[in-house]
Image (tube, rainbow, N blue to C red; front, side, top):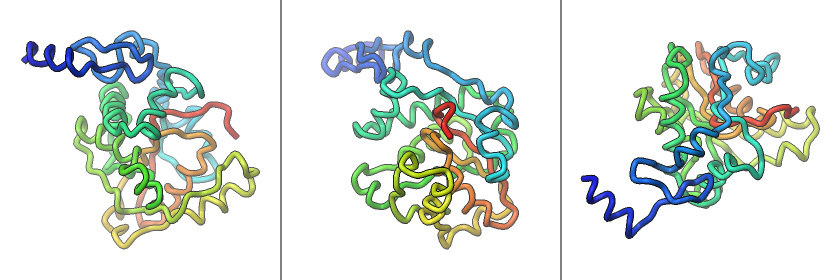
Length: 232
């Protein structure tokens, strides 16, 4: 098998999604050097009262929250997000979901009944062909076997960029974006983990979570691949 992999790697070389260097046979998606340098947050060590969880306080009731990485624009880490959002590489998101599931303390996932990927609009789906948050969720599911429910909340339209709105306009902008589907009853009484790719202001994640919380008996926790610090 290793010989076959070596032959394939010779004719179809693979490159690190972060630095662009050629991957060794035992490496996948991210080289060992870049993996070592990933800006892991370790927010999952205190999931109920970390700085990300506090971003949701007073807006939605959140059981726990964490992000796997700190996000910095124009960084090597940003290349990961760029790959699955703009370069048509869904397998990068799936791989990162697997990494999160393997590295985040198992206690964080205790009591979680299902994964709810933050939906994208039908226009964005037609263009991208996949939902990157759902691909992250699929990576998590492949390790932890937690069911995914992608048909609970839908996104009606692409909301205006939150950076163009003040803090009073953002909630209204997002509230008009998400809507529960006819399948919402399937998760009644469940503890749902909302899966997002990058949390900036948190408004999009909040908009999705608010819909889920309309379903009787639901509880919500949040997990994102990355987050932007000090974003108001």
